[in-house]
Length: 334
Image (spheres, one colour):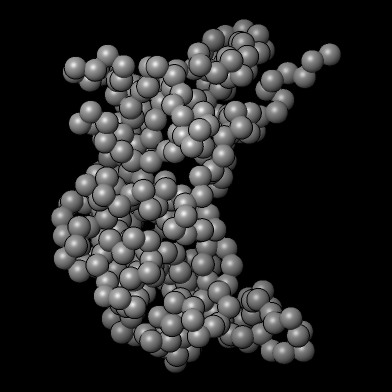
């Protein structure tokens, strides 16, 4: 007996990288003067629809998903007709047979991830190798954003073009001390501080730009003197980070704070309290500020980050002009 096509699929998970999925098109507009391409409105995104099939990339059938300009229209990705993929059609037919209702089948289809089924690969940039997704959700992905949060006061900071980084301090008396990374020699005391990326701690090394910035800004000593168990989260920016779209001088790197996590309370500090603490400790907070415009070093701004006052949720708005010029260096983050 043949295995149903749906048996190999998994539901979309918020923490996983969503590479291939089915979506409803809210609106479809032609591009004047070109009958081969249309622009679709999907979940708040404007996306180019290719009507002539899947293009080639490096001799293979495929497309590197990124922000690009096509016939004068900005596209955040790419859309193909469902009927180009027999694998998805088969799953839809099985769902319709299961539910006996087309709408229920489609609703279920929208929850499935087709990355493995279609053999789609995540493109790894040659510029950096991040450990995974990071940061706030893009505004276009938040359904009903202004209906839900239109009356909410937010802290607005500049979206900086850098790499995620956290600096933490945990005292020996904390219940979280034993959860800290330990040296291979288990007889040694665990260090009470560290510098962390998305998933792992960075080894303390004289050539590590993460540790160099931490020491130059004296972050760990400041946290120690405060005497609290905190993690300072932010972005490391500099001349060797991404494409240096911010315009740092050669060899210059700096860490900018976006939020502070109270480890003992397992909760984020409010945006106002975190900003005040940064001023107290002389830590550099991300500039508090339209996504388009000049940024921190008077270069083209990547965008803005909006955070709720309690710092529990936020979203980001990326400037189209920045994406078109520098976005190819950050493919893995979108």
